[in-house]
Each structure stands twice: as C-alpha cells, then as structure tokens.
Image (cartoon, rainbow, N blue to C red; front, side, top):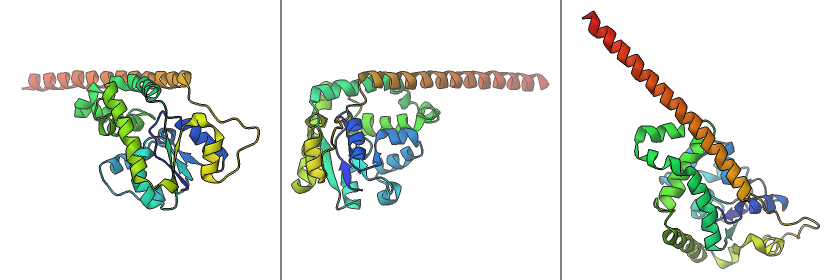
Amino acid sequence: MKVIGAGFGRTGTYSIKVALEELGFGPCYHMIDVVQNPSHAAIWRAAARGKKVDFRTFLGRYEATVDWPACSFYKELMEAYPDAKVLLSVRDPDKWLNSLLKIEDGLSVFYPLRRIRLLAWFIGTMPTIGPSVTLILDLIWERTFDRRLSDRAHAIDVYHRHIEEVKRYVPADRLLVYDAKEGWGPLCAFLGVPVPEGIPMPHLNDKEEIGTNLMIMRRVAQIWMGFGVVVVVGLVVALFFVVRASTRGH
C-alpha cells in the first residue's frame, strides 16, 4: 500500500481512484470494491466493532485506497503501512453534502427497518447489494453521522471535524490535502511521478450515474422485500392450516 485515502466519500474519490490507477498506484480500493466483493463487508464491519483486522493480508493486492469504508480506518492503515502517504480529498462542504444526500435519499427506505432486528438481518441477505447496504448503514449512517446525516449543520460539522483530525494526526510531510479540481499537478508532485501527457484528469461518477445506481438499488430492494413478504405470508398461511389440522385431529 502506497497511498491511503483519508477523505470522505463524495469528495471526488471515484475520479481520484481512476487517476491513481492511471499513475500506477493500482488497484485502488473504493466502496465499489465492496459492492463487487460482498464478503469484504463483514471484514469492515468487524473493524468498525473494534476487532483487529490484518489489513496487510486483507488489502494485500491493493496499492491505494480512497472513499469509505477505508477512510474511516486511515489510522489503522497508517499503522499497517508506515511508509504510505495519506491523501485527504476535500470538496466544497455544501456541494459534498448535497451529493451525499442523494445517496442518503436512495437508502432512506432501509433506515426505519434497521430498528427491527429480523428486518435488519433480511436487508443483509439481499442479493449482491445487501452486505454493502448494511455496511453503509452501520459505518456511515450510524457510526459516522450518528443517524443525523439529513441534519445539514451536524453533517457539515462532522465533515470539518474529520478534516481537522486528519491534519492533526498525519505528519505534514506524508499528507496532501487535495481537491480533484486542482488536476494532476499537486497529486503527481506529492506522489513523485510525472504528469500524464495528453490525458485529462478523470471526472467520473456524476449525478446521472449516481441516480442510475440508486434506482437499481431501490429496484433490487423492492423485489427482495416483495419476495420476503410473499414468503412470510406463505409461512403464516401454512402454519394456520397446520394448526387447524392439528385441532381437528383432537
């Protein structure tokens, strides 16, 4: 691991992921890797509960990290990789929150269900996205924002406090505070690599793409919840007839 991303998600992290990979620091770990590898979610959730994780083994093939969940464990990753540099991605706070709230709105259907243990378990069983949704709810909605992401003042305060904490914790010679709008220059200088010729700085994961992904997640959730309702109703009906048959037998 050569680069540890300490910036919150929605600070240009997907663009930065692609940029780092273009510069030779790949593969770069991002939340999309959790979606593509659902078994990873359990490891990150264990880390969030304070369990010791062997990050050098878990992330052995990765050269860099950005976004959640890794940004929540930048201190642990610095301990595991003492020579790695730390990249703190930042963005205008209001634009950052507006972007994040689009994801929050897409996941809001799951929040009240989390209060019921059986339904919380059922969310985790959703094909492909279940573990990722559960991780997002555990790590971001609950642990990071204390279930108050929609409270703008609180969310932006959490954002600022995280930035200041990273600045205090990471030695200045290992840290770059970086806005993706700055382009290749500061990033390449920090990493000691030449600026790619003729290749524009990536600008990915725009609002349209987010909307498409959330629509897919909602659709999968609706189908899975519908399936769950059918199963539960079927079990209730079956139990009714079993009890009825047993009563008649007596």
